[in-house]
Amino acid sequence: MQQIANAITWLLSVGTSFLSLILLGAGIMLVLALTGLVARRSAGKSVQDAFQLNLVKVHPDLVFKPRPALAGLHPQKKLQRPQLKNEKVTVVLKFEGDTMASGRQDFARMVDEVLINKERISRVIVVVNSPGGGVSQYGQMYAEMERLRNAGLDVTACVDTYAASGGYLMSVPAHRIVAAPFSMVGSVGVVSEFINFNKLLRNIGAEPLTLTAGNMKRTVTPLSEVTEEAKDAYKKQLEAIHRQFIAVVKKYRNVDETLVCNGNHWTAAESVELGLNLVDELATSQDYLFRVNQEEHLVFINKPENPYEKGLLSIARRGFSLVLDELSERLKMGGKV
Image 1: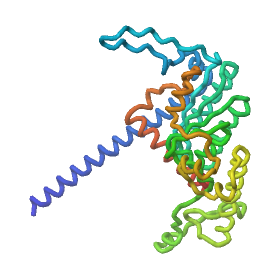
Image 2: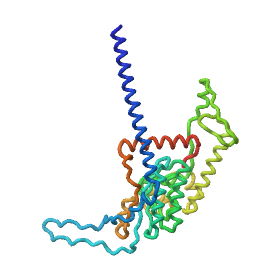
Image 3: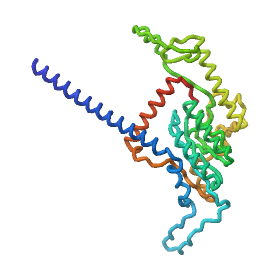
């Protein structure tokens, strides 16, 4: 018996030590993630400091490069880049979206950089890949794309995988949308889904309380009792957002509301085949940029490098940031597009 007790004690000791190491490691990662967030915020304080040098980079020659001579053949002459039609540059921005559009502030600063230098820019190409997410977050992305268009710049949106729901919302201000054949587009709708724990909590003797000043401050939440009146009010909020979504799509795209704005989504090729007018051209962003680069100078504007956003630190920071954003969204109980 003593041996068994010793073994159990040893196992508990090892388990406790292992748990302590896990908690210590998690604590270190949390501190590093927070440090990365602080550094990331400070890195983007000044538009001038963050992006001022991007437009003086050497224009990339992606196509017209000299090729080595082949064995046994005459040496090739150095290929000369032809005279460009426009000496202004074409700016390329990229946005990889998650549900909280966590790169939206960086994108906004890149838009600032474009607007600061717009006299030197002929047009803007935005490579968008996003399945959508929070209404307010992608509403900001839509507004940033409108800033480019309203500044008098020609805007093209390129889609490789997704421009659905919020991803499509941010793309519609573009003068043209170029999408890969199997990319997903559309999904003009609004959704809000969560688990309600009210009955579960009451069954275990806990009474959830939600106190508000104003009967519409909270309607349906994960903890409150769900009533038909509350569900109707919440659905009306989602429908109001949907109407706003439909209005901005119809503002820029000549679409049939009954066919396109019902929440359904399609591949880009299917949408062209059906004549839905969701996209203007079928091509990957790489193919489109390759062709454009033969006649235009391409300049890529990216956010500044941050040493805290690499490897495991990047995963920790991003995870921590997404959790905070998701918790904030849940507390506000906003819908998603």
